[in-house]
Image (tube, rainbow, N blue to C red):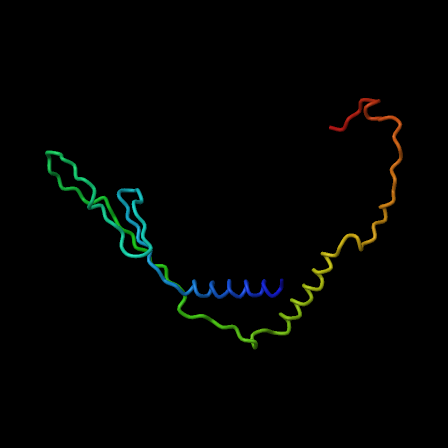
Length: 136
C-alpha cells in the first residue's frame, strides 16, 4: 500500500511540475457585452458570419465586437531545493510535532475509562412530568 501511495504521489508531483511550465493563450470574442467564443488553441471566429440588417438607411456604426487575448505564462525556471537548506531546527520541529500528534490518535480501547462500569439508579417516578416542571 505504501509503495502504491509513493508512486501516485511521485506521478502527481511530476505532472504538477510539467503543467506549471506550459504557456498558453486564451482568446475571447465579445459581441457587445456577451461572450460569444473562447479559444485556447488558434484564433477566435469573428462576427463576420452575422447577417447584416437590411435597413434602407446606411449609417456607419463602430464595431461592437472586440477580441480579448490573454497570455498565461508558465514558469521558465524551476528552483531545486538542496539538502544544505534544511536545518537542524526544521528537522527537530517536524519530528517533535509528529511524536506529539501521534499520541492524539491512540485507540480509545487502550485508554482507561473510569465510569465504564457505572450503572445509573432506577427511576420509579419521572419527577419532571409528575411536577410538570420543564426546562425551556
